[in-house]
Image (tube, rainbow over all chains, first blue to last red; front, side):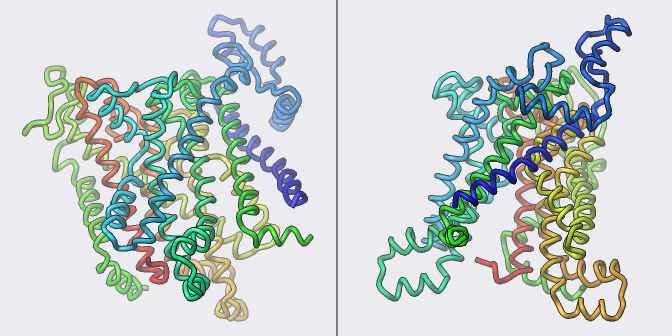
Length: 311
Length: 281
């Protein structure tokens, strides 16, 4: 098992490098002169040339990428923000916790809602509860999170005045953003849980369990649910990634000072280093989540565990 | 092939939800095509300071926005933008992903390894972020939006098509075709891709709705379709300013997104059930 974990960790290195390479190459397509962006309109040509040489802009692409990677790995140095002249890393690091917290809350709530309703729908297939939750899930799976968020603001903040609509200062501030991501995403999880549960309860081992007189409760939770959980876990990993990306929109709607809204501002300011570093940080984090999901799989599924234990 | 479609349609007809979806999406497509006849483009583009922020009435079904433009006109012309974006990006990414996936699956070996490694790495970057960074690098605008969301959609298609190709390559008739000396591209095109049409069509239907959502999100952030062009995401972003005074401005473009995405999803679900009755639950 330890060997498996170590192997997976080592395999992360080329993946992270690849992600960095892709983001770096995409961002280097951005037109414009870094020195001009930093020094402003009034700088002389000499000053521009000097700073560009200092920044290494005139170097070949691969050397620039190499220097970038070395700086990031050794010093956590993502360069300077064009806009504030401060190290990019300091800027984005203080904002990252907001984004992460929202994504984690989103995953937790969407999985609680989605999995529990999904399992009950599957148990009571064709009951009114099942019909209603399936229709609601179909509807919410098609609702864009940011629009749902705006509707929630309209209802709870503007009409009823119950909840605050922007910022993330108190616990109350978290309710609307969390709901606006958790409910649309729980719809997808609900549908998946329901269909995998329905598939699992048709398996032979469930019939065997029933035949030997195991109680309904034990069959559902011990035999069926644990097996149905596997695809759901993969889905949760994907949801996490989508939430990290979707943070861009949700944070804009709720004016949350996280990484997502920061990226949008940086794009408007043409602050390439900030955009690049933020996207990379979020993508790296998503890679780690995928890894964690794979490892979790190994723990949840004894078949995978056994495969590696023998070695 | 023709017979296949008839059979699939016959099965889909029994699925009420899918038929509702099909009717709604057909209506939306018709509205998009005949948008100019229903309400001329200029009503949705021309500013009219006298008629700012009028609530919905018989002259302005969905009211007017902050610039005095008719929201109903903007919503139906927005359908044109969103559906075109969804269709075009899906088509290009299906072809692009199809070529990559088919090559990877058919030739296998090192080429497969290489293509899949690269695609897996791209998939480690959440869709939205990849599209966002491409737009950040190229600049906003409808053309760059199209490029950005197409690229972010290619890996998904490539993966699915590769998986389907891998399952078909095993068949005897492929070996027979190879033994007859049929050229590779002809085998891929005639024998493999035609048999793989089912999963590709399902994926494409789902992809159109995903692309509509992605395009709307990017436009909402001000990075996609630029005002004054009517697009649902852009309209929602403009409507935020008048949240208190004119909440109806936010309802209609959002409802349009939900309706089109929902109907496409219903059709996609229906197609999946019709093409693979085993999965039907």
